[in-house]
Image 1 (cartoon, rainbow, N blue to C red):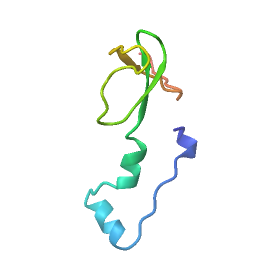
Image 2 (spheres, rainbow, N blue to C red):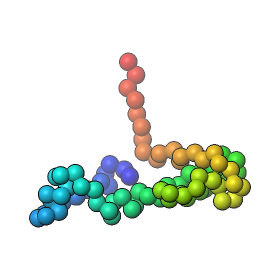
Image 3 (cartoon, rainbow, N blue to C red):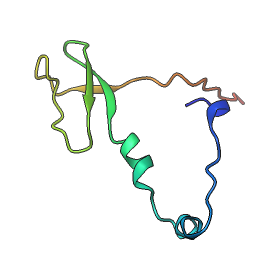
Image 4 (tube, helix red, strand yellow):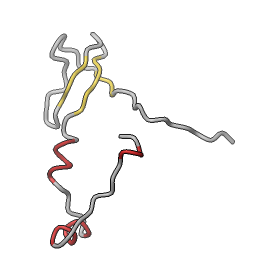
Length: 78
């Protein structure tokens, strides 16, 4: 997610105290539970959930790579 699209969540009442104690929200966790990978054998896109078997459904390959980020990454050389 690009930095410009990020909005700071606002909390009020009981939910504010839960967040300050470090409680995790179920809604945010569910959106990150599904990841997309690229199969190392056939090159197909594979979507896996948290507890899914790590294997490509197309070719049964077990080597999966994470997709490269689309954010700009810049390093300072010294």
